[in-house]
Amino acid sequence: MDLWTLYAKHGRVGEVYIPLKRDKRGNRFGFVKFKEVKDVEALSKRLADLWPIKLKAM
Image (tube, rainbow, N blue to C red; front, side, top):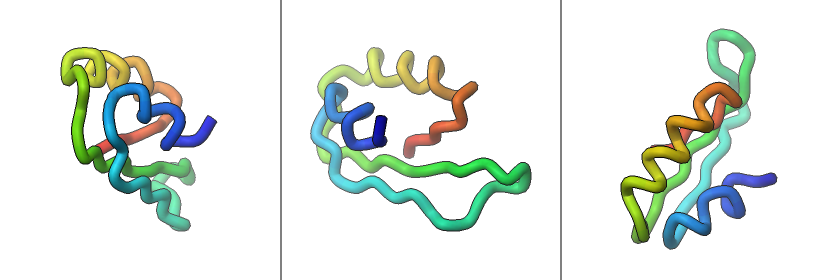
């Protein structure tokens, strides 16, 4: 699943960026920028659930 699809249900996604470089451990990461968030609480909980699979949103 891509970041657009994963986060679109939480609001209007403005930008998604996944750098080519990896973190210090060799893992991939990405950033999601929202234009509007429907439910901040739900998004916050979703982010807390996603950290173990190494997704990162800003």
